Amino acid sequence: MKHVIDIPEDVKTTSGKTAPQPYRPVADVTPELAQIVVYYPEGSVPATIYVDRELQSVLLPGQFTVLCAAPGAHAVESWFNDHPAYQGKQNPLQQLNAESAQTYFIQVNPGTSGNTAALEERSRAEALLSKMHKQTKIINRASQVKTCDYVNNSGVVLIQEQVLFRFAASNAAGIFAESRNKLDEVVKFTKKANNVSEIQIVGYTDAIGSREANQRLSEARADTVRSLLIEKGIKPELINNTTGKGIAQSAEGCGTSASQQAAGCNVNSRRVEILVKSH
Image 1: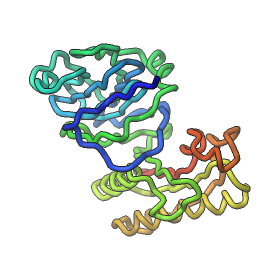
Image 2 (image 1 turned 180 degrees about the vertical axis):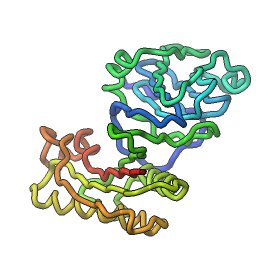
Image 3 (image 1 turned 180 degrees about the horizontal axis):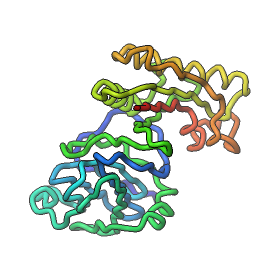
Image 4 (image 1 turned 30 degrees about the vertical axis):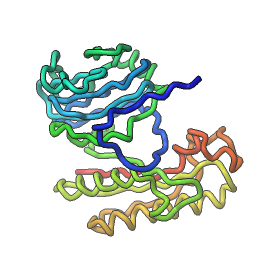
């Protein structure tokens, strides 16, 4: 029998269904930030994640969350059955001394009460994370959490997000609610930054249907995201690299019939990737 794990009633969640997002190795962050990956491989009850005494997320077994904060000391903890005392808010027990441009992995170990979070090496953490999915339902309330800004191999600062579409959809109505929030984050970042040089948009599809149809669909999805960014106030001249690449590599070998549209490899292939590049 499959057991249902309930999220506390007082935790605010996003509405609607969102597609599962598998873990992808995180890139290096800029010197102004430190990055923290909190993951919960197995257990029986939800784990509430606090950052500096404020709610960041609630993880179910098999979920992870990625957050960034300014370098320095931060209380990052997981608590089981914290209601109604909220000890994680009132009495944090441990601090992470986060250094500039560093990434930390914190594992939530099984338990039913108290805090079980512990630092783990990246290689061991990512071996477990490869089978896990990102937490997308809980709305962050931690004021010290910041949007992660990444550095690529050539040293150019960037922020990267992906927008997921429903099966066969290419219009704005076909975008998942959580992905709409990501669009807003991209807009907010771009408007605040004073050195953005380019926004690159690349559309992809699942493996269902012909390659010709999927090529057109990927281009339409990319065009939709471009239009939405412009509607939200992004200058059109910044978005001069919009392309569709057809079937995503992540869909190769996945099911190709319509009955397999819910397969994870297909769901996560119906996407548009947004890359904001800075000087």
